[in-house]
Structure formats: C-alpha cells, structure tokens
Length: 239
Image (cartoon, rainbow, N blue to C red):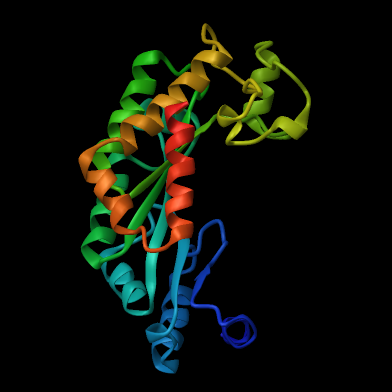
C-alpha cells in the first residue's frame, strides 16, 4: 500500500500493473490487498491489472478484485489441447480456462489470454485447435507466443536431445520471436521455423480480425496515441 501510494503521489499514477507471475497464488494476500484498496478509497481513484492461474480463481475473488479496482487479468491458457497441457505439466484443463474467463467477464474484468504455438510434438491440427480454442474462450485480448527453450528448462533438454535446436544464441530467446526476422530456436519435429511464424501471424489475424474483437479494440481507443498504436498493430498484422 505504501508503494502504491508513493507512485500516485510522485507520478500521479492512475493505472498500475502487479507484475507477479501469479498475483493470486495467496488468496489471503489478494483479499487483504483488495480490502486495503477499498478501505483507503484508492479503489475509486486507481485501476489495476494482474496475472493469475485459471485453476486458482473463483467468482467471489474476482468480484472482490473488481470492487478493488481490477480491470484486467491475464491468464496463461497455453494450449487448446488437453494432451499438450499434460505434456508441459501445466496442471490445468480446458474447462478451467473456460470457467476462469467466464467468471472474470461476469465480474466486469477484462481478460487477456496467453497461448503457445509450437510445443513439442504439436501437430498442425493441434495448432489449429489452439487458435480455435482462443477464439472460443471469449477473452478480450490474446497473445500467441512461439515455444521458446530457455537455458536450464526441460524444453531445452528435449530440444537438445532431439537435435532440434536451431541456434544457441540466447539473445534470440524471445517469446515474440515470430514477429522478428529471427527463426524460432525450437520447432516441433517435422515442422519449420517459417511455418511456425506464419501460424503465429495467422493466429493473431484470426483472433483480432473479427467483428467482436474489432469493436472491442475500437471501443477502447480514446486518444491520438491509441490511434497510432492501433494503426501500427494493424500494419504489422497485414504485413
């Protein structure tokens, strides 16, 4: 609370983001922060966003977070295929993701989902299923990243063992690599880096170039800076 109050006093902050990987990992802490924001009156002056797991939220918590000023929550959905979720040991189900998004929307909180394309053994059909699942979820925003084997991870070990590593230049280990000139560091067997980059762009186009999503984006465009950002994003997707 002291830190929140200080950024308001020093920078006139009106929006903040809790960058915890999982803000809701400790429910008592979530409720305590929400209670303090409401009690202090900051919930009426400040809006905030956070990250969470789909299997750890419930309706009561989300409604309290909304009352305390939360307007956006990001969920790591990862895949639209149960087999792949088990493979990467995510320990969630497709139903968990559907429930979490529905509850958040019901509470009046916008939802951003993050998904991964190109997981080990992922087939073309499974890539397509992940894109379709993202569209079905009904989230407001979605980010599609390419599977990236960071040093020390099990994915890196799998890639090394199968001879799939295309490079050991770790400066290229970016989850957004598909939108750069680099090829991904990892691709599933039988698939290519160029193919995965095309699927990533296809996923973004299919998710956002729909009437519902276009209206969602346009309704949030409130300034010239927003317009510039929107035009830049449109140009990137078209290219």
